[in-house]
Length: 505
Ligand SMILES: Nc1ncnc2c1ncn2[C@@H]1O[C@H](COP(=O)(O)OP(=O)(O)OP(=O)(O)O)[C@@H](O)[C@H]1O
Ligand SMILES: [Mn+2]
Image: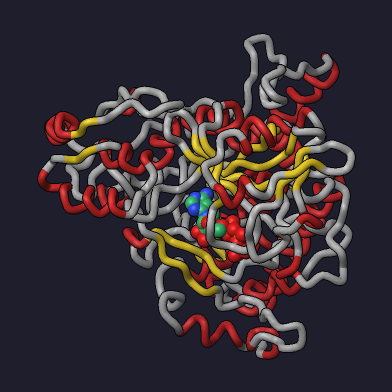
């Protein structure tokens, strides 16, 4: 147990100890304080993010198949280089490198304490070494921080990470390869997911594979009964980044050894009780949750290896509280009742007059989220979250994309309703969407390229081809919708919110 004797934080620490907040939060508190003198922003690098391991000679390797690197053929490597260059070209486009005004201090979610305060308080913290964890030798210098802490420190008012963020590959690699020290069930939400902790106190949310890549969601299932898909979580992170939003926490795929990396390290007794061997000898577990947590819906390894997604955890709620907002266009959870927006074509007029949608960028942010969701066919966006610290003028965190990419043969037009009813879109978003229809940046191609960097792509493409084609088809539908909005509104500024007035093109 970590003991805090630093006076200013005594109250906070006592509370933290009382409620048994995980050790990594206390470690974070060592470096962070709520009202510290500010430090500079994380430096963003100009190098291309490569969220997997690429050896010097360009041969891709991954160590996520239980530690054994998987080599790829020369042809694959050449093709990989060709598709990756499309993604690199996209990310080098001026629309991804728009000059952002320097952020004032209140635009960073968390800041490092000044050197003096940190040193003073570090002396006041005593730490017993904890089994399985790395010793902590971080100080105020960013260079000494583990990737998860750099990720937290890089969250700003408008995005979770920077374009070309040099920390991203390190964060993703850590989640993909680091030893798992503990795995416990994460409460909240309806389906089984595990909170995994790494030796450097980093944490990630694990969602197991529940559906084969080509399997489509049963048409008779209501969206709220659909499974969560690990590959949807991975693909959503890549799609959100390609759209230029950077509002989905980084996610990576990983093969987990059910026994070694979950059963043997869990301290969660309720979870531990649900492990069993299937009739063919595969290791399975089902956990405890309100949906699909039963022997019939167990997740099973082959025989122990289980695919899953790992999403970087956001800063603990006690450090960075979040506010949850009801989506005005949320679906009815009833099988027979329609929601108000489904029967009121003028619904947006009312929303536009209602705070916080009546000012700032909240409405166009919601439209951005709508575009992401229509592209990935995610109907499960009942709520969204923001960081309380930034008030109403901030981005919307695109958390929980597990029910996306369930169907490729059909689009779901109702997801696009906010755009249809409001006829409003950010100019920067619209220009990037148009860019993604050009052959040299085609959305399906850059998504294929981006997803090929995920370690699981060595086993099977993260998204099956029909899902990639569906992206191009849906993108065309979005642009047609904007076109018809422009026809309805002679004043184009009624439709297009110009967030980049200096950008000509
Ligand atoms: N990367 C993350 N970092 C921190 N908290 C997270 C992260 N992802 C999800 N959460 C939190 O965990 C809770 C459940 O996550 P999620 O929504 O993904 O689960 P779920 O079972 O799909 O939920 P639901 O059934 O409501 O769709 C959410 O309330 C969210 O606030
Ligand atoms: Mn969900």
